[in-house]
Length: 173
Image (cartoon, rainbow, N blue to C red):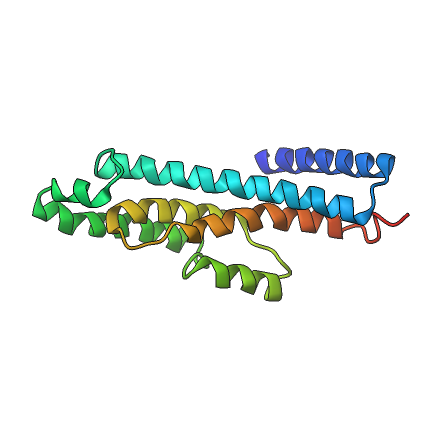
């Protein structure tokens, strides 16, 4: 029921965008610049959200502060051992049950999706990857923050490309 309503909302937005394009008849370069700006903004907002999630989980697990090493010095030795275990126990089932393809590094996965999957990245995969990395970074302190950030922009770009590809030559005069 909820998915059907979301699909109708997406179709309404899609029809409004196509009507706007038909009304103003922008050239292909203008449309591509607008799409690039939109995808860039959404990717930037995704990176900001990811950073917020990392800070949230770090505050939840270790406490608030800029220097993670200084925060780790103040906790007992047994918590230093149990933190990665607890992180693995949370992240493992999350990735296993919700998005099995959310493993490895982000850039090769994006390239794989572009080449072999017609540019489609499931939003669930990106969401699980972002949340799993946001949990893993504070507890393991070995992960990098750029991996999930590079997932957020393609997740916004893939539906846009799919939307535009349904009507060939839509921007032709």
